[in-house]
Length: 103
Image 1: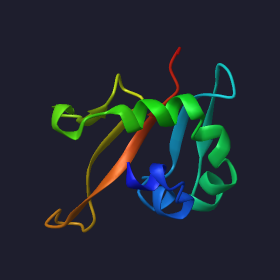
Image 2: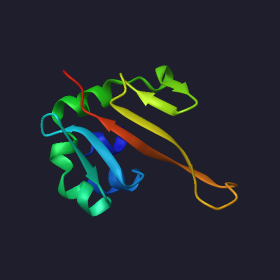
Image 3: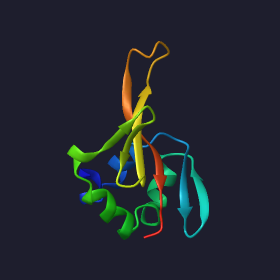
Image 4: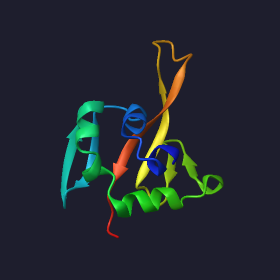
């Protein structure tokens, strides 16, 4: 939420696990984003005002969690722990899903 609040494109892009498919990117088409540079170049199309408002309205204490990870709002964003080494002793939280829903 802090990255969204300040529109820190680089920080938000660093939290994404690539490649990531953005659902309903510019209408009903999905778009696969390959890396942070492509995410930053498409930031305004990914972080729409409506989507941003939904994510910022989420109370952290009310996040939904299950075996797939943590869901923000109604599924507009999911994040989960991803192993960062072969033995999975280390992990990092990454954004793994970005959905644009009907507002």
